[in-house]
Amino acid sequence: MTRRCRRQRYSSRSRREQQIRHGSRGQSGLPALSVERYGRCCVLSDRRFAVLGGVHTYGHLLSLCEALTVGDGEHWELLPPMHDARSRFACAVVAGCIIVAGGHGLKSTEVFDEVLDQWLRLPCDLPIDNQLFAIGSALL
Image (cartoon, rainbow, N blue to C red; front, side):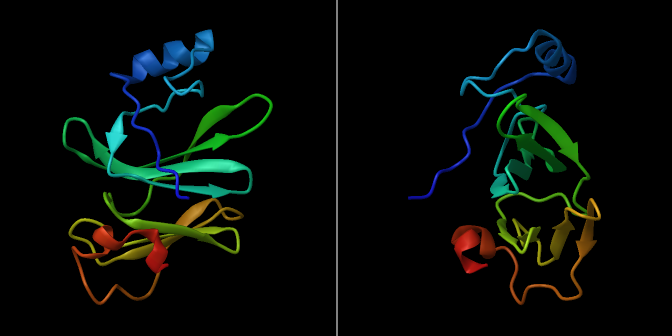
């Protein structure tokens, strides 16, 4: 059974900062994300739940990445942004690295190396564009 990320609504960064200070939680009972988004991709890696990219409610594509540390002191931390802003793309974790591929109108691929704490472009693009999002992460 595959679980999808739940969409959470938060209107501004200042609202997020208030929630952090006061220990507020989102609708799911977890700490709230910094930005409302849809069309994102989610993975679980090394006891962290990562939410990658997506589309902001104002229609802007995001390269923003955040990871929720699970367990005592649950909190979101910002990861370095992806090179390309993406929505509706495939993502998977392989050998401790997060791989993202394609997305709406994209052929590019990237890998996040958690040891180096940076996104690296992969040397080849996908053979197709604008179709991978309909398939999802099972392709990887």
